[in-house]
Length: 79
Image (cartoon, rainbow, N blue to C red; front, side, top):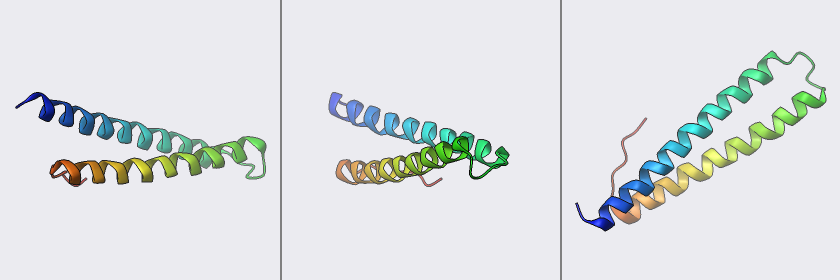
């Protein structure tokens, strides 16, 4: 494996780890939202905004990971 392939694989692996981290953050936020009784509270509203943001980051990271894999000709395994 040459240096270019190694760097390419490092980028892909970093993006995969970043996606896992985002998914874990999302699960944690959703758990907090589920345990919040007052859906009109400031706490819930902040969690809701965080949830929307994290979901957007997950969508963007998934898309970029797919595009990078296509450009590099790397096949990603499905979850």
